[in-house]
Image 1 (cartoon, one colour):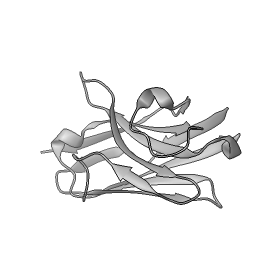
Image 2 (cartoon, helix red, strand yellow):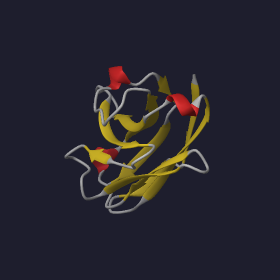
Image 3 (cartoon, rainbow, N blue to C red):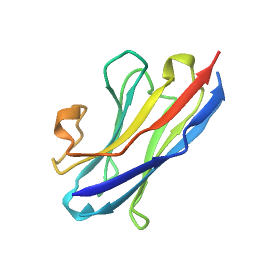
Amino acid sequence: QVQLVESGGGLVPAGGSLRLSCAASGRIFSTSTMGWFRQPPGKEREFVACITWTAGSTYYADSVKGRFTVSRDNAKNMVYLQMNSLKPEDTAVYYCAATAARGLSTLGARYRDWGQGTQVTVSS
């Protein structure tokens, strides 16, 4: 099992930036890919971005492509989500997740371990 703790959320005006962090601990060696998901108020959880631990390959949802950047620091067991040009529709609880499945996956069901989430609110 992998423990995940997100941080870095907050309130930011439209057009602003935030960087979310995800600290991973436990059986990290069993994971292949880290993902970021979000759940807007009153909506279903949705995929945001993912990255593989080894190659650093990335994949983004169309809604955040060009504005968000996912990265990882293998030495520190950290994953980051840099969010620029934020929009009110980016308001959500953001979750970090880990999967042992190889490759890039947008499916939440493939991710085994989840953090508690961090709130991001973008004001208009």
